[in-house]
Image (cartoon, rainbow over all chains, first blue to last red; front, side):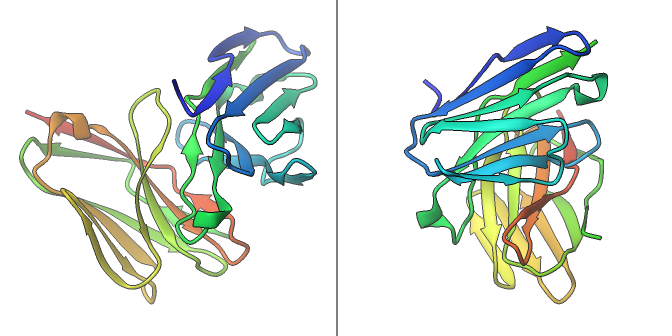
Length: 115
Length: 109
């Protein structure tokens, strides 16, 4: 089983619908992240959380919201999806005790298509 | 602005050596990372450089020159399974990761 699990893996929805992408991890890491990946662009940070009570906006937070329900769970919501939110979304975790390397552990990705 | 540049695509032959370059302009520097990403899969960590020089790890090596804002990933004895995208990322002065768009490496028999 994957250490970082994302659901759903694939989702097709319509403009204006509310969508939630869920992420859960068994690595015991405090830090969790949501990224989106688009062809020809680097990974872009949407939101990140360093612990349950900590939520921070990333580079492209507009149109998204997040919830850190527990150390192991971090959800990303699109309140009213639009076509340019079509992308591959990744959840990731990191261990602050290994901050000197900053290695991220990624989930398998959630491919979202907004029609 | 902050910028990471790497070639979009490279082609190499099985058994050969390939070097993937990465140049960066960021506000501060706290380390450079290389990740491998197979098509449709998650990125996986390959290497980390924070000091100048070469870090070797099996068939893969990564080099850093902070004064030149330059790194390369060297892959030796290429195998077909090395066909993937290679992502360069720099941690800036705020400890945020800035990602390049990735280099798609195609290995031919």
